[in-house]
Image (cartoon, rainbow, N blue to C red; front, side, top):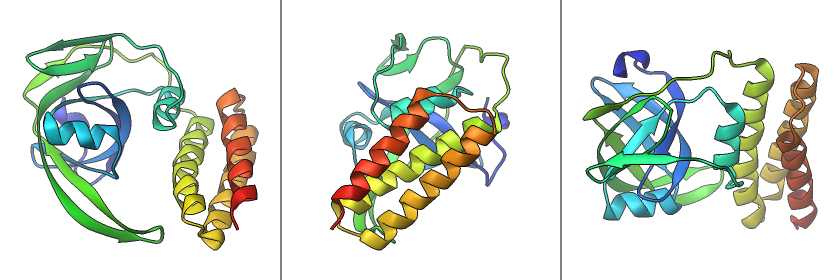
Length: 199
């Protein structure tokens, strides 16, 4: 399973912890996958229970819904303290994690730097459907929205406006590439609402 991940590339996957699921970007180095968590429930759970599953999906809407904490219906299975989503391929393993300071255009924060070595494979299959360009735009819109939420809360007007513009631009591309999901409309509406509140 690990051979599917080319070294140095960032892959969007699902991280399944004790009671949470969140999308993360992972990078393979050798026989380990590395990722960072910027706070949240998954980070807290890994500090207490350092066992997780990494699962692959080509369902952009599932990634976006989980990333934005929108409701989804999932079935779970597990063994020996590990938990995973039924039907999706992946692997599970113990997570090594340490806290580190991190700074970017949004400011300074503490992040959890993590790595996992596969201990067991999770059987599953993916829908026989390629990722569309509209799917890629939807994922980018969701990533920018999560950053916009932080920028708006911090009162970073210039950065918030830049992110809002990028969401609008990607929404235009999303429609041009044939996208028609209600989630994209919700992201745009959410972004506009956030921008109205930025001082």
